[in-house]
Structure formats: C-alpha cells, structure tokens
Length: 370
Picture 1 (cartoon, rainbow, N blue to C red):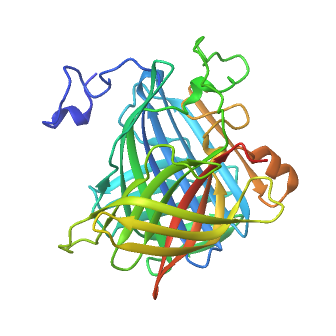
Picture 2 (cartoon, rainbow, N blue to C red):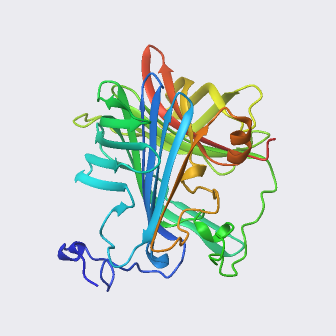
C-alpha cells in the first residue's frame, strides 16, 4: 500500500513504506518527549510508538502537578492509516524537520489536555554507538536513536486549571528511535483473552544488582547526553558513552564522553530507589572534565506509559481496534509506590557545573535493590 512517504526519493528496501525489511515482532519506531517548568511544579512526558509487524500504534502522556501524576494511554490498529500519527486523543506532529515537533492531547474523560511544541536549540545528534545486544543467541536490541534539546511553548490543562508553557520557563527534550528493541509486549503478561507472548522464551532473569541510567543535560552554550551501566560494586557493564555538543551556529567540534563517575542521593524510605540528586564527574575525549551536581525538581513514572508493563498493557500490545485508559496517581502514596516499583522513572533536574546553571532529565533504572 503506497503512502505519502512513498512519493519521496528515500526508499531503502524493495517495498513501500507501510512495511519494514524484517519480520521481527520487536521492530518499533518511537518518539519520546519530556518537558518541565524549571520550578518543577508542572512536567509532561509523552511518547508514540509504531509497531509495524504487530499492526499496532500506541501513545501515552503523563502530566505531573505537585507530585500527582495524571495518565492517559491509547492504542489502535495501525492499518490502513499507517502515516497518521494520532492515537485516541494524542497526536504527534512534525512541524519543521529536525527543529520543531509537537504533542497534542485533546480533551478526554481523564481530565488532562495540552498542546506543546518542542523547539530544538541544538542540532539533532545520533546516539553512538548504536544499541546492539544478543541474549542466548537471540537478537534483542538492534536500534538507533537521536536526541534534541531545547525549549517548549504552549499550554496544559489539568483538572480544569490551565498552565501556560513559555520558552523562557520550560525545558524540552526529545528522542526518536527505531529498530529491534527489547521491552515491547512479547515479554510481559498478556491482557485477558489476548495472546501476545507467542511461545517465545522469556528474557533471562538478572543475576546481579545493577544500575543503568541515561542523562540529558542542557546548559546555555552546551548540552550533554550519556548513558552507562554498573553492578553494585561499581564495575562497568560495558562502557559509558555519550557526547557533548553545542547550539546551532556554534562551530566547536562535539566531544565524545570517555568516562562517567557518579554518586547518587536517594529519598529516605523510598520503595522505588527514587533519586533526590547527586554528583557526576564526566571525562571527555580531550582529557577535560566536567563536575555536575544534580537536584531533582520533579518526577514521573514511565511504567504507566507501557515500559515493562502496567495494568495489563505494555507498549506494542494488541488492544483492539481502539483502546484508551488512564488514571490519576498520588506518587507519594504507599500503594502507588508499590504498584510502580520496578519501573522506569524520569527525573527533571537542576544541574550545576561551576557557575553555570542548567536543566535536564535523568533516567536511572536500578534492578535488585529492595
């Protein structure tokens, strides 16, 4: 089936754009957005995922105000509208290539709506190296991603109250990824009456406590993205990797990250190992270092958006022709803490490097610590 993308001279397979050149059920293409007010009072996380070989497209959005998280998630059949980036009340829009994108949430029964535009202040930069991993002989990750940092504008309404989003008070970050990716629905319990596991061997349970995290930090004249993993003793699981780069029009050459050391502070009594702040010592390829201190301003759980499964749904699961769900959760509530345990959290942070003050989003994932 030909779509408008097929008019472009950019084909790489002997097929139309409604197909991909693999039959792997884990093939997906996702866009993620994170934005927050620099006071930490209001933050938004949203994402849209297209699962071509599952005939599924889904999306989620979470708005957090004063540590109360409001969630909406939706799914629909992908065909025949494969080039329509709307799922239920959520729409993703590419306004200006590599510069401006938007997420919109129309009014719905869950009481949140918004229209937010993310404007890049630096060029998009590819994640290097690309993510590649096998598990027991099976390819589980083979994907590429790019990031962009900038500001946000628009509005958000929660519970009848509207908050203005302005570029001088809001930070925006986004990524776009595609390829074969672990964490789609095949590894998680299927919704009632739906078989999404297909008899596949489940992932190997972790043998050790470890942490993995990604950080996207932006200052006035430079930005940094990096990620890495370690075990409980601090030994590296692979290498830390990332890059420092500069705003549009800056001729300085980007610099690769070669080492990252960290010291996290956690909220006392947290059941989710929630990060209150910390310190990062980053070493770049030219031998220079950047010491960055972080302070958490706000948080939201990505688990409600389908990461590692939530209430009978995981990203990429077939939920029927049209499906929508949502709820409001007080993040400090003990029952909420238990339900969200083991998921991924995004933290909006204030970051300081010398006399510079910046902002960013960190995503630590800690396995095996109770």
